[in-house]
Picture 1: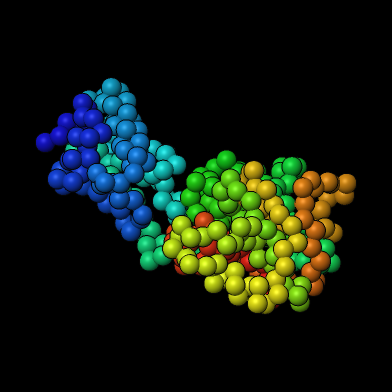
Picture 2: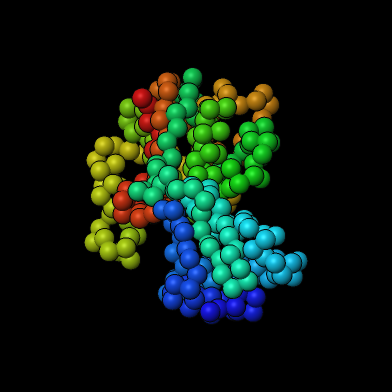
Length: 281
């Protein structure tokens, strides 16, 4: 039996594979196996470190510490549930999640509605006066951008409280494409024909279709803060300036914002061109 007080990450991985440690994932997306990435080993290192701290506090672990939780961005499921440890005795524990994952059958798309009263839309990387729009508890696990539920919560907060559209991205850039009717926007790849490495012989079919429908790029957003945001200009606080913006004229109304980029695990589920859509409903 493995000794969790003295083991190293490799030994812990082997114990997991040999079923010496019970894992209860409750449908959450967490798979601790040898062949997985360095992230899993980093989680195990923190797990061992956390366990050793507990051991030092009290040797009667099963009595004093019947259940523990520890936070690590890599061990938090996309639904926001935090990995926990339940210690049975100094040489055994349960590793898992307390509640069943609501996303065990698949992740939801980030979908919100925003009001666009004048149609004078501003697209940008982010708003510098972020305290005006961000939730007061933005540093809580509820709004952690390390998991998809946190990003969905951010999107709902921005839309419901400020009529702001938002999508979390990478350190990249994207173009703002608008259709001829001016009632749909695509935030998409700004180099849509460089996809041979992804197995495409030509442009992504989503891009080809958008060009057939007459979509035209109105400008580029440099996403140094790893996101894009948009708002109707009339809803900005008086005197607030937005730098490096792309201005687009749309038909006024209510728009549905769907973000695909980091919500769907497999890019080919939605194509490589289309990151997000903003469409009048």
